[in-house]
Amino acid sequence: MTVEPLSVLIAVVAVGVALGGLILTGLHGIRNEFRDLRGGIKDVRGGIKDLRQEMEARFSAMENRLSIVERQPAKLEGLLEGLLEGLREAITGHRVA
Image 1 (cartoon, rainbow, N blue to C red):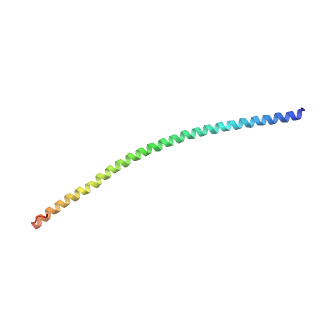
Image 2 (cartoon, rainbow, N blue to C red):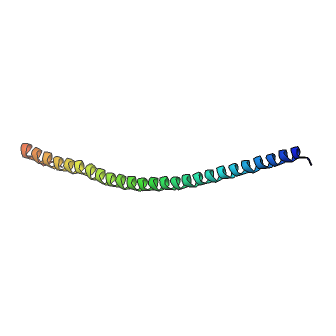
Image 3 (tube, rainbow, N blue to C red):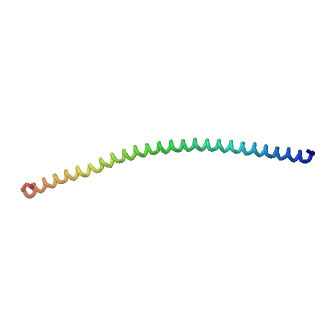
């Protein structure tokens, strides 16, 4: 083999090794970035889970407050009906059945 084909062969092998090193380095960096993204996704999922629990607690508290507010007008309505019946009896002198 003469010097010229040997130098071309060495150059091709050197370029192949250099490209292989670059590809492996790039893949390693991409793999690390994906690992970081997976960790971030886990953090986001944990945050969403915490927010969901907080919202469920707040809705439960709101439902409790709303049920109290709904019962109060019913109590007032009953008291007003009793008062009106008493006034009718006082004015007319007749007892309402």
